[in-house]
Image (cartoon, rainbow, N blue to C red; front, side):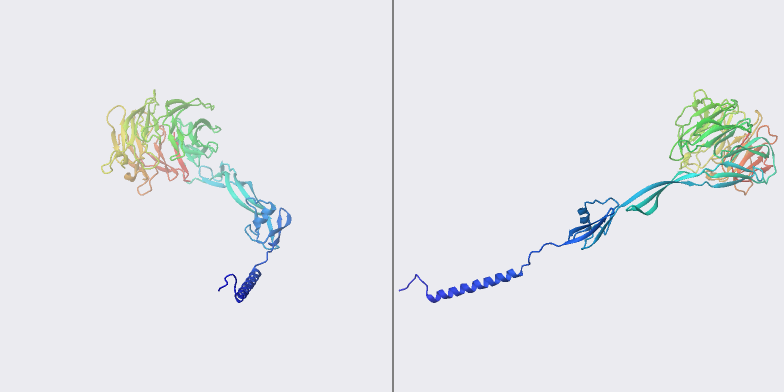
Length: 541
């Protein structure tokens, strides 16, 4: 019989021993595990010395703190230029020193004087050793901005930041006389000429010279004597205060050595201004509007008449032609020419030549032209002159060339006479060049008269060619080249001038290499009358 309710004694002992052994090893393992764990410790602090705005403080910061954390602890925000040593991203160690440097920049403006230069121009129009101040010098002003850097209130650098010229210096220009190398030549009337922005006149002989305008700012756009030679009409560059103006129009009494220039209160004249024959102290002019783009203006294609008095009073202008588009290439403008008696007015512009109806200002075409395509910022306007009988116009056209394609690109330019009493135009010179600028000699009709003109040395490149002076009869006969001599350099394009009608020998004055030359109509007598190379414009009445 088996007793199922109890264990055998020897089995119970074994179980107890096994339990004891397991418990022992669990305790040993627990002790071992508990021995490997780190004991809990408190995070260490470091001392930081911080200097800012003249004060030094000591902060206790956690180990591993950065300079930026020190700034935050101090409640400081850096300015745009402020910096720290060491930099803000630096990790600090115990005992480290941090310094805040306050940086400030100042900008100071200083005006500096720009001394004017001294320039000397030699001129044989003055007697040897004589000096004439033709332009007083004016100092300029330069505005210099300096940048100064301060660190904690101490200047550490000062450098130039910006420089602006507020006012340009104006050079002092003195003209010193030298002995003229040429013998004086008797002349009739007055020969006016422009040198270094000043107007001079010769009278009686080419050795008798005197200045009439010494403002040193004549621009040469307008420079013309009245029919009797008593007055000079001229243009001056606009002053510094006239930035929107190109130039201004003035007159002066040539006969009065004490006369002061008269301001006609007219501005922006580029294409035309001249005296109206038979109307006393009356001038005609056409205006433009300044533009920032080439050529620097937009022509109004108008015409105004203005009368002034010798005492300086100026009447209001009278409009003959209202502002208008001026036809094709009208932006460049037109030029005008009065008949010798002042009863008729001719015009020339890029698209043709004709007359002006003086009653209503209408343009009456006589010779339409296809405007020349210059492929540049200028337009070609044909030269124009009246025959002294007042019935013929002399001008230049550019017909279609046989090998040149359309007329607008043709290099062919021909001189012709245009009778105003009827009949076809009369061809006078083939391939004269675009800058022939014919000029009829003054005289009393119905006497015959010669025509002076320029003939291109290279007719097919007449826009860049030099020219030779040619004289012919009014019908184109007896053509002869008189100046300069064969083999010599040609003359630059210009309108030459005849001596007055009352001259016993008719001369032509021409500007050649900056000097004035006189050539008689036969080409026999040629006189160089200046030698300083400074002349830019001439007129003779």
